[in-house]
Length: 264
Length: 311
Image (cartoon, rainbow over all chains, first blue to last red; front, side, top):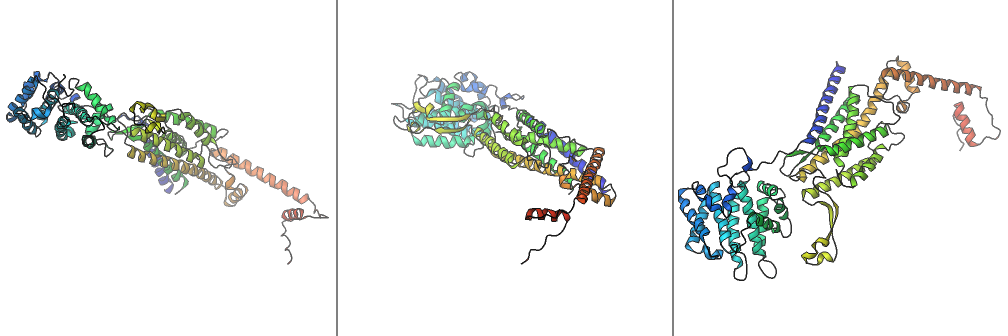
């Protein structure tokens, strides 16, 4: 009886070993699950091709996006967007923001940032148009405060929408593009002095981007992983000394017409 | 715990270790396999080491547990080598040659058959594991070289023009070559998995080797115990347990083992009888000028106690 019990015991051990050995061999071939970006999913997105809204021809789809906004912000948003795009001069950012239209712009922006994905995209459209149609690149007649202001507005938008954009078909790609633009604007700000560098925007952008992407904790956030997958050069560059150089470079590819001087 | 159970548990330990060495965590936190390429190299090294170390051996697995034990030894060695080898780079070939040499080296009095993990082999494997962990760490930090050395003087000059010659990179590699996942690697959990796997397989292999030796001895003992009690005791006096492996009693079938024991007993008894005859025929030498050495030998042969030296 004892001998039979011992045999059963050994047979049980041998069976477990066999299963574990097979698992140890087959699990070696396990590949990571394919990464599916939100816009690649089967379900139809609320807004198709959202990056078109951020391009120079975004105005052509203005009505489509406006229809998704609440009535209270639809009119102000439309006025601001049309007003910005109708500008022929190239005022500095701070000067334009101090006009009545600029103040309406900031109020509409604040209102939109409390809303859903469509409102988030509408807010980003305003910000990108601001970067496209006003002068913020530091120069002889343009102070660094202009680029810092654009950077601050982009930063507050990213703080609200970026962390939840990794799973949002509408905001996934626009949020990544906004990060690139933010990097470019902030780099322009900290490289603005003719001699040396401006430390304040550098420190602010460093802390923000590292927290946003999870580089401080050495564990990338969902947004950090999305940025790494879509723009690996920009993500890896965040750990370099000139940490926004790669972001800025990629931004030129995504927004070739935005140069901080209205393309003039 | 008897030897069979010990053998079973040691194989279980090897299997668990192999499972841990087969996994890693990618940058997204997903469990990913470590790939078949390292296992292929490990299997080749294990096969070569097994063949070289077992040259001249006639032992065969005799039951299911023996088959499991042999398979575990082979797979364990393959998992272990696959776990410690950096799966690319020029250093891979040196690592393979060193491992082959270390795994086939064996002392003449070595108890177990097949490749064995000597202390030297264990140290070499641990050092190779450290190299692989270092490479994995560098990869997880997006640094694609073993180390980067700053060139003195040049690296202190703050001109970006000199950036390409400010540092020297040693041992460059790329993620595909090293089998790193596309999304990067979570180094901490992966380090824990591989270290635990290495410890489990190494200790499992050593344990298995000792348990297999003990189980073979148990089988021979069981065969001898089928004789009547007094005769069995006599046979165990004639053929002591420490010599069973050396005399080729391990790994034999029941029938061949009986035949071999019969032959060994006959040979041993013949030798003893011849010696007794020779001893009876040898006259007392009565050495004229006995030196101490000759006197001691004679006393030993005659079985007399040596005279007590006086005060």
